[in-house]
Amino acid sequence: MSDFGLSVAQIAALDTPILTALRTSHAALALNARFVSRYPAAIAPFAALIEEGAQAHNELRDFAKLGPVALLYPDAGAPAPVAGLDVKIAAKVMQMIATIPAAAPPGFTPETLGVADVPDMLELTALTKPGPFFARTHELGRYIGIRIDGRLAAMAGERMRPQGFTEISAVCVHPDFQGRGHAKALVKALMGSIAARSERPFLHLYADNPGARALYERLGFVPRQIFEFRVMAAPA
Image (tube, rainbow, N blue to C red; front, side):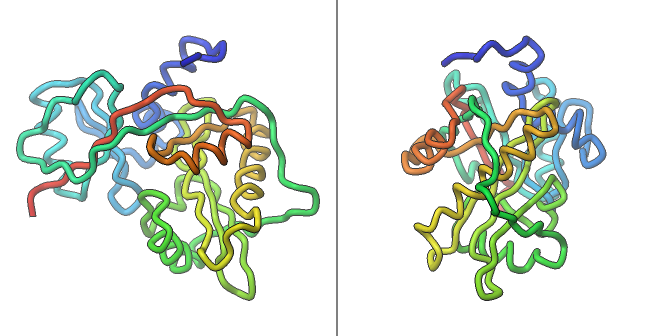
């Protein structure tokens, strides 16, 4: 897969998006040990190894006491198991990067979602399962939505922000409101606002989800990298 003329620093940021975000735009949220960093469990399960090894695995086990830990590994074979942690999810994840500009459709003004909307956001994400979403996930960035007759019909938002990039995430539409272009409109709106900050949109999706990939390709995203995704937790 191409690196699209990115600089060495940009490639490094996208190759290690969790660690880079925790060291830059989300540094104030980071929980840091010597060899591992993670987000607070109420925000996201994502963690990153600063350096592989036995001590890193010890720190990862300690962090897993706070809640499950989710890591992205380069797609170079199965990652080393972490003794004492159970693998809950093992999957291939595709990283896609925007290659063309986009903006919200004319006249489209989504609702900005915040603390008061958390119950509705949790209900929608529990129903549609776009990825990990918790009570404080909205603190990672800007989340926007569409309400119809008072119901949260669709939403999307910003998650990891490695320097120079912003990840679009939590794109979901209630089954009662699918097929109306809501996801497309929300993603285009986020793409426009991200570009206005001189940042570049990117995203992750399960590699075996051709429907989502086709949607994002129509919006100008192209595959860049495949990661091995692991969610691990302490034994029950």
